[in-house]
Length: 423
Image: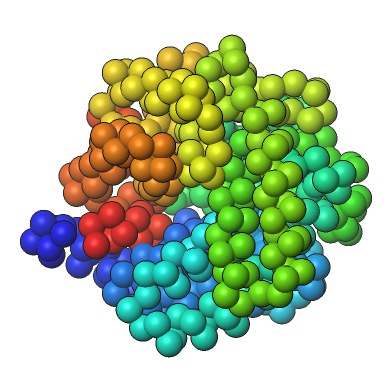
């Protein structure tokens, strides 16, 4: 697409430069003043559309926060800021740079593979991907050891923030088990930078911080965190993203790894491919997350339930059911893909992950629809995403019913997705 046909392209590049803090991008000024894990994977792919050297630097900066055990944290606090809560003092983790103690959906291996395969500067990309590969290998081994210690094939998320979809209605019942009492004084900053009506509710934040307190008391030890967490969910989004990332890591291992690397990754892929179908909910006609404490499927359809397409893991009947679901949603909203089934009683068109459209999820869903041979729906999702951005700007998320941009403005990963979709 030409620059004329992509009217927001220059603005998108400007936003990435404006949000650059010296080798890493903040998602947006003030509301999110640090480096976030899965944000930076998408942001790196956006940088790669016009500045490949800077794209690799984005991932290298994130990996400065990687722990020795392989964890890539949710947040890396490269520089101090009073604009976000909870900051490094709440996490209480003595590292340089300071980090949070939980993670986010593992998009990094997918980003590295796509950046390598699409590189214009092949020499640079080969060297950078080769250097990053061991960190990716350690991170995927961490997911196995820390979050699937029984080798079930499904990894566990211990905090709604780890799913990336913080206040999804899918977490309501599981989160209700988490007490609202906190040891940490809650000093929210997000509701001073964005309308409280589009942010998670106060009670949800109390439960979020209770979990942080619990894990801090557990010394951030993975086994202790797993044992004591009152929130243990096999999130369909995280599991699908990880399965896709494992496949991309295997492709990288074919170039940079050892036979043992490839065998270990292939074993995990086979285990995950066998396990992911257990998250199919026949009553919903789609994939859904699983509450591991209750031992039950969570009967809420969300955009995350479409991500097995991104993982290239769905049978023809499942694909037919999932695409029929997407078409039903399209009949109820003006723009795809709402983050929650618009027919669900807990759908909220403006509130964070309870209804709004997110460009990054749309990018993954469209990618999966291509794999499923539904180019028509993939084009519809991409077209809706571009139309939202071009009409409303590079907002954090969008109202699926009327398209208005909501949340943070001048948002890095929305800018990145726009560049990727219009390149």
